[in-house]
Amino acid sequence: MGDYVTGVAVVPGRAGSVHLTRLARPEPGPGQALVRVRRVGVCGTDREIIEATFGTPPPGSSALVLGHEVLGVVEAVGAGVGAYRPGDLVTATVRRPDDCPSCLAGQSDMCTGGRYLERGIIGLHGFMVDRFVEDVRYLVPVPAALEAVGVLVEPLSVVEKALRQADLIQRRMATWAPATAVVLGAGPIGLLGTMLLRARGMAVHTVARTPPPNPAADLVAACGATYVSTRETPIAALADGLPNVDLVFEASGAAPVAVDAMRLVGRNGVAVLLSLTGGDDALPVPVAAINREFVLGNKVLVGSVNSAREDFVAGVADLERFATRWPGLTERLITTRLRGVGDAHRIAETATAGVKTVIEFADD
Ligand code: BGC
Image (cartoon, rainbow, N blue to C red; front, side, top):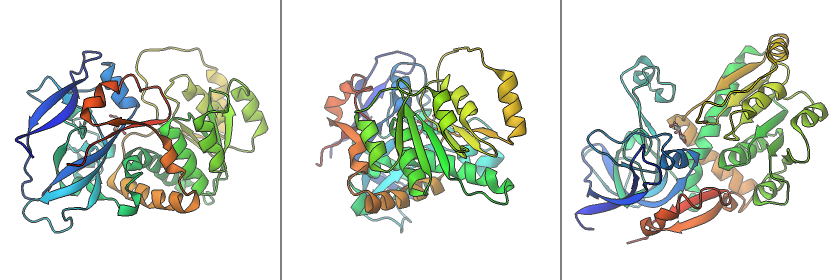
């Protein structure tokens, strides 16, 4: 290992500025681990950063190293680290706390101060780099059996949090036994949400534009959910044909679909909004009907961002469940593999191809 590590960076605010950068080789201090990166996932947030609608570099730098979905191997640990040893597989949480009451209470995903940082997104370099150093309290162990799919723990943690929020909200009900769910969007978040809700025993209807056959529709069918193309079945027709919808996950990435989520959620149900949408799109909406339906139906609309360490831990356990229940299925979410940082300029061009793009880092 030389004196430098190589990372994939952008200049936030400058579209199409993906480039390779060199950072000083990091050394683990007390309570930290040096992690060699195996695989990094690319998601919609990375694309927004590449398109210059999101993202902030660390102080003193014009560039931001991308990457917040990581699977790596512990290579060395600093003083006082007993929980990890070289060779352990790990992932890492994304957000780092500020000093607000929520963060001090260990809930940085519910930060009220708004001065949080996020690796690869806001104010901290990310994981799209040969090696990084991290405090071990932000690492999450991944069993060796999940080597092929452990890079999906972070996106899965986002839907784990969404479901945890719904379960917490529904403590208002003496009987919360969700039976019917609708997932809007069949990207990685929509598909992982579909698998999670199927694993919880719900009948799941996953809605996307593209008619079948396509890889997302195959994945939906393979876990026993129903794929609905809005080109074939308009949302209103879907709503008419369903029993009471207990839970909606909106993960389409398209702002107007939030209105569909509000129209679809049933009596005493919860609709969770998960799409980060840029721009200032406006839309006329049937406010009287939506308001009436929400009041008469005790409905809840909630936004959910980021995820807590407990959601990562739940994600690891659920990836193990998925592997037992649907062998090989989770692997099929990874449809595009880029080889090493040298191939990283292709991130933007592979952005819309397939389901999930990952960057494979070479063993050295
Ligand atoms: C990440 C979250 C993050 C959010 C907003 C998402 O892509 O998964 O961890 O909080 O972007 O920055």
